[in-house]
Length: 317
Image (cartoon, rainbow, N blue to C red; front, side, top):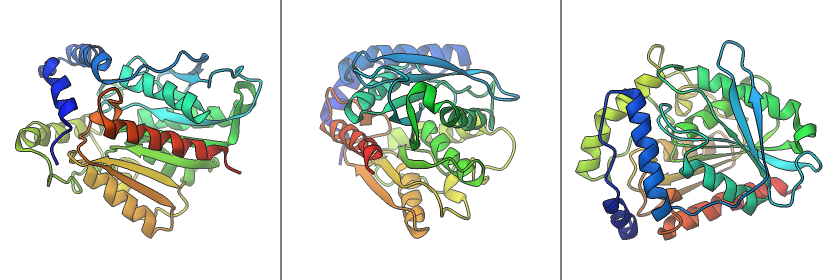
C-alpha cells in the first residue's frame, strides 16, 4: 500500500533536509525540519507539570531526566506508574526539544495517566556505544531509588523508545534482566532498530527511491553508534540475543513502508518463542517517521491510541 496521501501532501510542503557531513549543521537542519513539519502534521501535547532531574553516570556525561506528570497531579504527593522514554534520531540527533518526541510524550502522560520520564541521553559520534545505554541504566536505577520522592510507583515501570530509542529500550530491558532486575512491567518498541548487522531489514514494500537513500546510510548510522566492537553484541542488537526469556511483556510497533519492520517483526516472533507475552502491530500505509503525525494521519492516531492503551495497563493490578 502507498504512503498515506495526507502525509505525502504535507511532506511536499516542507523540503527535506539536505545531506551534509558537518555534524553540527546536520543537527541544525534536523531541528529546523522538525520545527517546520510538526505544526502541519503533529498534534501539540498538553501543558503538564514538569520536573527536570540530573542523572549522573560514572564515566559518562551527566544528563537530564524530564518527568512529565498527568494534569492535576502534584509531583511527589501520589504514586503513579512511570515510563522511561527514549527518543529516536539514529543515536546522532534528537532530544527533549524535538516536537516529535516532546508532544507525544505529553499526550501519553495525559492519556494514560502515567509519568513520562524522558531521558536526554548522549549522542554519537561524540559518545559512542555504550555511553547512551549506560545512561539509560543509570536513569532506570535513579527512578527506582527516587520513586517515593518523585511520586512514581517502582513496581509499575515501563520502557518506551522510537527507532534508535527503541533499540536502547530493548537493550535496557536485557541489561536490566541480566543486572539489577528492577520490576519492569512493559516495553514499547516503536519502529525500532534491533539488528544492527542489517540482517533482518525488510525492503519488500519500500520504494526504490527510499531504498537508494536508506541503504548505505543505515550502515553508516549503525557504525557511527558502534564504531568498534561487534554489531552482534546482544546489547547492540537485541534481536541477536541467544536468550530472551524473562523479559518484560512487549508491544512492538512497525511500519509497512519501513525496512526496520523486519527487525521488529522478527523480534516479536523471537520474544513469543521465548515465552514473553508480546503484541505486534504493523501500521499499514506508514513509513519510519509518519507514526506520530496525528494531525493528518488516521494510522498515526490509531498507533498513538494503542500505545496510550498499552501504558494504561500499568494501572492494572
